Image 1: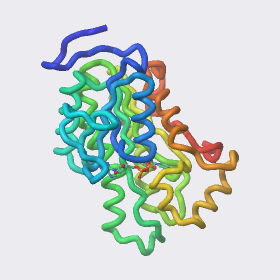
Image 2: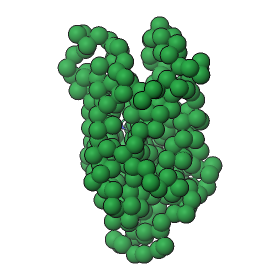
Image 3: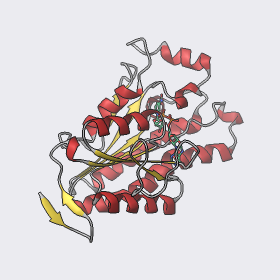
Image 4: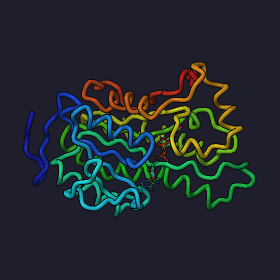
Length: 260
Ligand SMILES: NC(=O)c1ccc[n+]([C@@H]2O[C@H](COP(=O)([O-])OP(=O)(O)OC[C@H]3O[C@@H](n4cnc5c(N)ncnc54)[C@H](O)[C@@H]3O)[C@@H](O)[C@H]2O)c1
């Protein structure tokens, strides 16, 4: 179905992931990078966004990037997020899919020695950032009558991981955020869900101290860590048109570690 909305924005309910217009945030590394690559390989048009850095030049979405279109975005800065989302909307004529993989681990330390400033920094990127992204993308999706918004939580948000008080709290916050947003947008054609990975081999996971990695490995019934490609495969399903009757849900990706 095709209908004209705001100037330049076209509602075009995709019939498959190949017909979807996607924005992947945190696309320079790890799960976000694998997701952008997988969606592109499936035929979707994908814009990646990440913090500007030497490896991520960003720039206007109109300019081509080696790995596809790229945008600079800091999820903690509402103006930066709004500007990047507007650019993506103009370039693609709409956004059917937004996957927000931006996140940090932060300092791994006892709650008693974690400075309040560090707690706030982690919450701001992992949780407030997800709220800012949601505020920026949901109006256009709701107006179009179709959308798939996915934020990345963590097993840490369900279980709580020792020496990661802020990280665990931020990821638990994602669960409440997506459940609230899902209800608010349930009649709009937009689904809002969370992925809760356990341990996925990415640069972020490599920051976890070795002894803590070993302790987490011991909890995984499948006996191994996950890969970014495995995360991307589940993400592709969650943001596909086929996943039409699931919103406000948490999809585990933990090799059997998550038990509820
Ligand atoms: N790897 C794991 O084991 C694991 C487990 C559970 C949850 N997660 C979550 O999955 C998501 C992706 O993590 P990953 O393992 O791929 O990590 P990663 O470090 O490989 O990638 C994270 C990306 O987020 C970007 N980013 C950080 N701050 C940002 C900001 N302010 N604005 C925009 N982009 C920003 C980084 O530049 C980076 O490219 C994170 O939310 C992480 O918490 C990862």
